[in-house]
Image 1 (cartoon, rainbow, N blue to C red):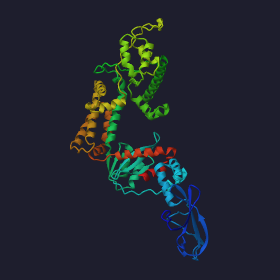
Image 2 (cartoon, rainbow, N blue to C red):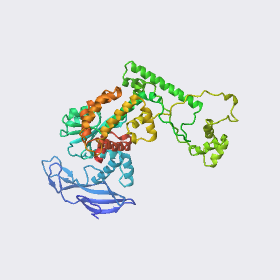
Image 3 (cartoon, helix red, strand yellow):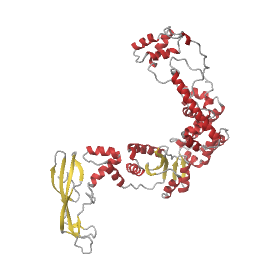
Image 4 (cartoon, rainbow, N blue to C red):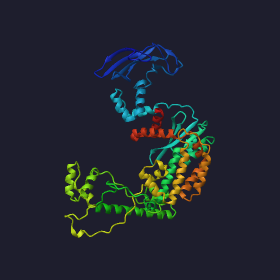
Length: 547
């Protein structure tokens, strides 16, 4: 029985079943004496007795009710200010505690893994009930680990509230474990953290100027490494910014190859007059906002001031400020339709001369079509060779045919990915879009410079050995990019030149911010699992203790 209910420093008196789901365990101290906690004098004179009833770990799925007989002793030291004291059980129970240490540890581990509310719901089924608030208080009382002093660290930002509040995460790249969460991403905070770790010799980061300045202030002797993935990301963002400005011009370029004939839909079904008018009104409102942003920018207002006064998103303000003309959305390809599996049958029947919508609908219904006749009429309205019998004659005045527009061009974001990929990695559709865009001389220049820089960065990715000519290749690319005549590319090259030492270190050394990015993903999971109670101190403690 003692092995089933181990009580450190106690002797088991008896075990009594209390109802159907609880067991009462009565225990008392083994020794006949106790030591005064103030003067450390030993006493055997018992003053009185009382009983403590702390909660304990369950056994066989049943709750344990511990009844601990506690004695109060006289202190016989005349110099001690205490006259009586109660015996203690430090290995089993803390002072004034209502639960044993092992139960508190089990509840804390459950709270660390699940969070407050989920752990409270689970512990109720495990015969260890505990409120969510008590769990959070227990997690905050768990001491943080003391990891070894790091020498190679990575730093990255993470969002406590996306778009509003950001912090920084510090990761030990050699041991692949998080070190700390900082309350912001400012240079001063990062420099203050680095000053407490003077042994750090290398810092891997993204191209944030705050982290660069903070590393220079806090660890001037450390080598700064620009992450290669962020270099590729910044290159794509640079190409996307340029495309957002010239996209209306590129959409006017003719396609280089004729589209292959197909019976599949190449555009969406026509909209109703009400939908067309609503869309035109919405586009008109956005054109007014575009003109307002351009006017404010011409008057000398900053992007931040325009964002604050107009209420537009920062990305929208930037896009409108640098666009040569209003960035209209390209025509989107057709989405999925329940009519698509039956298009071959419809084309065959229409070629045979059948233009009766009801007849075609009956045929498709027998083939499993679940739609209405309205969808057949919409499809047939663009392909009729003669008016329907129900068409009003006075509406048959031929409308002027609009000039054929070139096929839609991918969005700037999609096109930026395609322009930076190697030609042999593109499918037929993407290759056709790239060939169409490269008819523009400026586009060909931007795409060539972007691909060259991506080749330089990718030559160091993976386990490939460092090429001896990687620094001259980077310098040659910088000189070409600075003299290309495209403002966006020249600005990007200038920023790389300012951070040239970190970029070259990223191309030569194997370190990167990959571990920091992975830890940010784990941090996001914890933050979202905690709902609205993810305060920084609690999130930091859970994150570091779970690691």
